[in-house]
Image 1 (cartoon, rainbow, N blue to C red):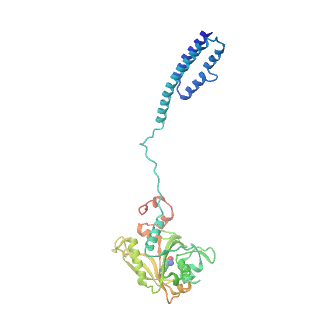
Image 2 (cartoon, rainbow, N blue to C red):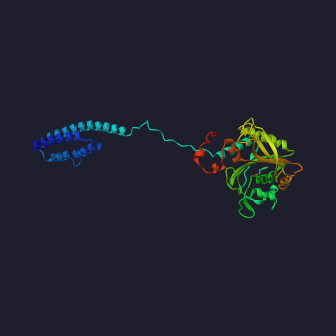
Image 3 (cartoon, protein in one colour):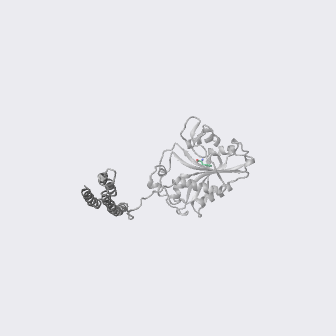
Length: 352
Ligand code: PHE
């Protein structure tokens, strides 16, 4: 009986060593250990027969079993190391990074050129001590027209037809109503002189073409203090023209009409393309019209509760779209509103 069992263990060793040699993954190797030495393993089956042996035979089988363990473990450990090494190599090979692949390009957005232009204008006037005030785009007829010295049925209203929400409520045709809204809030005794700009959207019932859009942008300017004159207006606008269009620029004022200013002027800037010689941009005149302005009409001050005997002021209205078109040589106002990336992406220069 003992001989037979020893023979079995011997064969089992041979078989186990061969199996270990053939194993190709750490999982397979673990399975072998269970199959041979686990609770229901082959070796365990043989060991269970130990109890049927004679007293002196038991250690003889024990020796063989120990031998099995030694040889098994030795081969097992060796193979385990080898497989771990192979598996690591395989994983490394699988995870290699191809550093020659081109990177993924992150496309970077750009603020809309009208926003950039508005901010440039704001910065410019902030630097001259102005405050920025916003007003509603949906406005009352009272502020948009009446308080701007344009009574109902006044013929000059025709120049600014708009979209009506109701008889009394409309989309503002200009940023000028913010003048009235600000004046009635401002406490001259307490706050001192008023210097403000107000940028924003305006609307008109225009037929859209290269230079007209039913929606566009303006920036209103208003300065009210004792003894403000046309000279203050001219000095301010000259500074604006130089800062925005270039140091070489000059301005000229031409008489005009607005119901809310008296006298009223159109302001031209000397052509920044030809410097005044005459070219296609300035239509051979050497000058480009950029804004409307004037001395605040006493009626506008009085209607907002400001004493026109003590205070005077100037106001101006710049077309933000218009000055952006001039500065960046944009030939059609509709480009601003069509969200064509080929257009918008051209204005990355001024960003910081
Ligand atoms: N509100 C005028 C317009 O839209 C511009 C303007 C503003 C003129 C302020 C004079 C003073 O045409």
